[in-house]
Image (cartoon, rainbow, N blue to C red; front, side, top):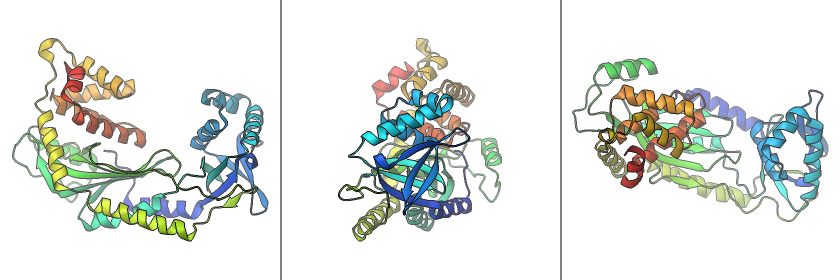
Length: 387
C-alpha cells in the first residue's frame, strides 16, 4: 500500500482546498474560451458583475471536450498546435448549447471541473469530518491517505480484527513503535517468517471525487501484514452517486455563485449521517470472516502448471482481463515468482504487492481493487485465467 499523506498533511490540504473553492452555475453559452499570451486555452465568465478568467486543469479540459462533442485526441492536438482554433471551436459549440447549464467548480484561479447542474457536490472535507472521528474512535489506524487530482482516499485498518490465512499460528509483528519506517517494517516482518499463515487485518477504503471522476465509496477489504498491502473487496461496498435535483430552478441568463439553500443543507445532513453510520459499521466481523474464508479457499486454487500453463501466460491473462498496463504486468510476474505461492492467493498477493510500486495513487488503488476482484472470481473464471 502506498503511504501517501500524513493525517496532518491531509487536514492542511483539505482546509486549504475548502478556502480556495468556489462553485458557479453557468448557462453554457456564457462560458467563453480564450487564449492567453502563453498560448494556453483558458475559460472566462462574468461573475458578480465582472469578468474573470481561469486556467483549466487537465481533467476539466476532458470535460470540456465531452461537453462540446470534440474528440479528445483532436482536442489535445488543437490545444498543443492550434490553441486559437480550439478556443474558436469551443466558443462555437458552447453558444449552441442554449438549454444547458453547467456547474463550474473553481479552486483559486483554476477551473477544476465542468459538470452538469444536476451534479450533487459531496465534498472531501465533509467526508473526512464525518469519517475520521468514527474510524479513530473505533481504534483504527490510518495506514494511507491521499488527495489526487481527481479523488480523495482514506485507508484505515483495525488491528483488533485479524485472522491468520492458512491456519498457522499468529506471530509477533513489527509494529509502528518497534519499526516506524514502512520499508523496514516489511523487511522485519518478512525476516520473522510470514510465509505460511499470513496474518491479515480488516481494512476500509473511503474514496470520493469532487470533480465527477467517481462515486463516494466505502469499501471493505483486508490488509496483509507481511508486506503491508491491501486487497479491496467489491462485496458489500457502499456507493453514493453525485446526482441531485438540479442546482438552479428555471433557466437563467447569468452566471451565479452556488449557495447552499436550506433544503440542500437538510438533504446533505441526512446523507452525511448515513455515511457516518456506514463507516461506523464498516468493520463488520462477519463480513471480514467471509472475506477471509474466500482467501483461505483461494490458497487451494492452484495454477495448472502440470497442464503446461506458464506463469507468464497467467499474468498476461490477468493483465488483459483487468486492463492492466504491461509494465505493471512485469511487476506482478516478478512478485508472483518471488513469492513462490502459485495459487489464486499468490496471484492476489502479487497484484497487490505490485500496486505499491505504481507511481500514480489512483492506479495503485485500482490494482488493490483488482486483487479483491480476483478473490471474488467464480471457479470457472479462475480456471480461464490459470488453467
